[in-house]
Length: 113
Length: 111
Image (cartoon, rainbow over all chains, first blue to last red; front, side):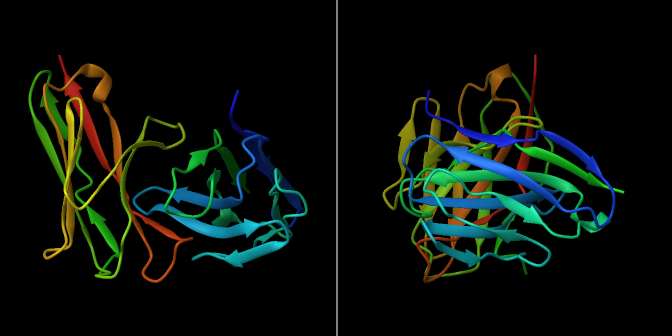
């Protein structure tokens, strides 16, 4: 089954404790991205990747890191989480860029206390 | 001004009615337009792309008005299962890689 998977689905952590949210797709998509979704603000892009070893900042990259060592995986790293990073996070992939259908993972609900 | 603006709703509509959403965008150079649907606490899923000539998919019709910089979505004969949040999406000016998402319009279909 073609899909995007994210783990964990729910995470409660404390300020400053490094965490990684994994994202994997099995569709051989070149493009992957991370979004956060907050009430009233819509989806905001954190980082995106056009292909392996190529990443770029989205609109809200501060406090986040990403890597794209393999085509299928695109982990999101929070080196020192803060309460303002409490949000719903989505990973997405597409064939090649924003002009194509975006396939989303199920989301990760992160709470930082 | 937001790059993509939508009426947040909610729109409370009786089953069988026709409902229309509008979305305005600020970048006149945008070329790609989409409507996504998001069920409560779930991931967004593509509903339809929006083409210059307008397009229809069953009960759903999407229109693009470049001069006024808005796109619309019309749902005819609404069903209970149409209850969801509808997200307007536009590509960022000069970028094939970045999309700008509206905050969404919540639709509630009542029996």
